[in-house]
Length: 191
Image 1: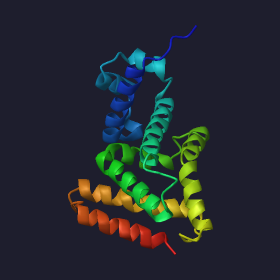
Image 2: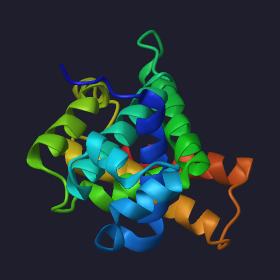
Image 3: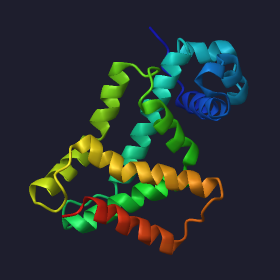
Image 4: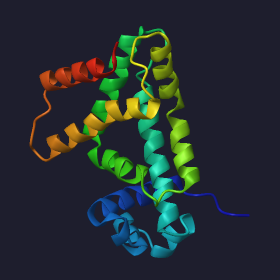
């Protein structure tokens, strides 16, 4: 009977992997470096993940699941469309700004060959509630009829870029800047 995974060790491995891969990239990622950073034996990491590809796929799904669940908490079906849009956009922006390494990791690996088709599909399924929300906005003529992948890129892409600019000290995200960015986002998709 296989032993159950120690969740604390899995989280330590994920945190260590995120830290290492943000410094070395995927090609420089070594399981021994992850183990050292996590304070575990290299063999322990291999008990949990058979190779670095499996580890990257698991970390990607873990991060995407956490981020999606956290920002979808802002959604209240009782809100009118623009209020719900505003809450979701602000929550996504705040999470991305607070967790830039996680955001960059997800962004970096979303379209790479390192993720399996199954991982990509599972990641897409996480966004179904957001897709449904946006499709409802299109049906009700609140937002432009744009293919969902383009709509998502139009909304999330600028957030990625603003967060990068903020952390590279090119701009400072203030309350007024955030308000302007939300207005830009709304105007870019609204009818």
